[in-house]
Image 1 (cartoon, rainbow, N blue to C red):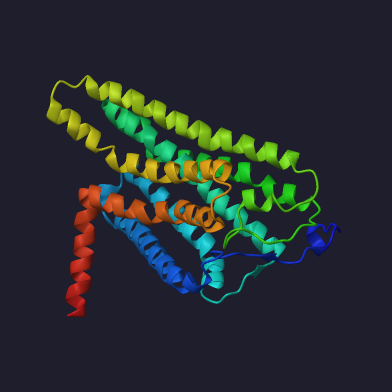
Image 2: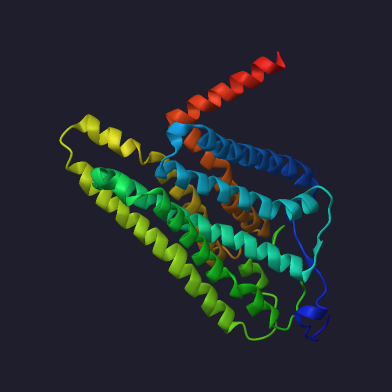
Length: 317
């Protein structure tokens, strides 16, 4: 392409990347990713099915869990086409518009996950700090309204990104660092002034991930304060146990994200495949582990899952 700029209408396809330097191991990596995809898709689909079928789970806490599972399915299906193409069929080209669409959905579901985790922390706060008002505060209509607000906030935050990228000229090699399209990766490619994109990107990250994580932390400070006021040690542990699944979901979402951000800033001299692996962990681990955690920690889901597995086994025999 030389030094000549291209706008989005005349842009050649982007080139996706697997794991540089590990080409001989990419088939094994695809098998690993295939297992992760299977666990994620089957696990989250089962969570949704169980919550739908189990009448005792028709409560705000499990409505939020169904939102989380549906969102995790969205994350998995957003990355699946290009990951499959790169690691299985060695097809690395993706058109500009397809790349913009994938970037939009990956970041949309990522931002929504943060909002859903915040809503779940509010659910735990009301359940523990104001248990008598739980059913009046978190009505079905209010849960639906909160879910809609999470979607609309995320949509409004992400919607400008493709258009902000489309206005820029591209004159660098269109080689991406991952097997999917991410905004931090794409913003390195234009040769025009990207200051507006960078400022906007930073502002939406602070106003979503930054604000959400601070509010989640604040809600758990209030929860801990309320729990410590309980006289019985057994009751304190029982109450805190209701938060374990959500705390694990928060940690497996935010810790890899912070790790990716810190490594991108301070680990520039590390091999490139390390950056790619960290990004894979960030996108693949939460959708895979969330259904596993909630299946283990939630008695009703565990019991219904056992029935499904036993029924499947008996039909096979």
